[in-house]
Length: 307
Image (cartoon, rainbow, N blue to C red; front, side, top):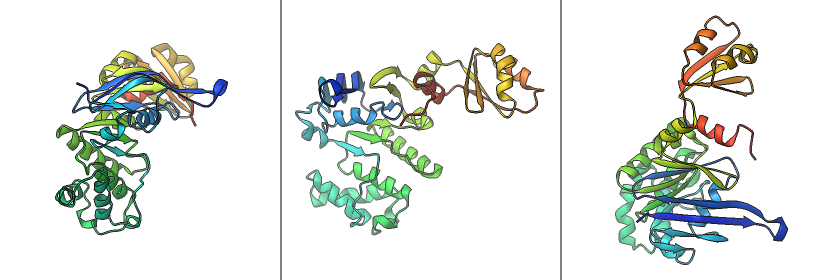
């Protein structure tokens, strides 16, 4: 039985003829022990989908079953068995690190003994044992994010919802969070993840869905989706002469060419002709690499900015 099942979900906001559809017939399931990613541009419907799954917003139609409970009817019972890492840190600044964990544990009806028995592991997991008595204002951004993650684990949840867990962190902090999430997955936990970092999704997700304008436009394993939608190799060309080069030689040798700013992206299954043509071209630099999840994302959702 899936730990989370979402079937034909619809959600609109607004009144009468001014209603705007934000979730349009989305369906997916989570298997126990996997990391499932929801990817999409700003406003695609990712956070709304998570709120619907948590029973914080009511759907117009469709069904949600979360850890065996119908949502929103039994949302309170379901939320006792899950953890949530929100987009922003909402830690209590008046409490210390360990006090934040203790107070959160009481929300789940945990006894004092249960909370105290989990505190050492939570502090060690988040690398905050040395900061257990520190106030929130004394913590760095990475420390606060790790504490938010530890807090979501107070009740030893079966499923953890993570809404952009590493946004705003430096590379070192991001890699530490990734290490901790892999530890959770290895221990059999299940994660539902939204992120704007394609390398994060590619590293962590067993399966993922790409959502745009409230609709699911692709779903599957990251490597399979890349192979299905994108040519195997990419040559990025940039420099003063890149655009001129692309209008002649580049388009002749690539299967597909995209231009973003001053960078030319040449997509191909055989990069040798492109690399050969660039060997003696002045005013350009280039990078040859395999196709990745970001290429897939940009092809499916476009390169234009979203607010």
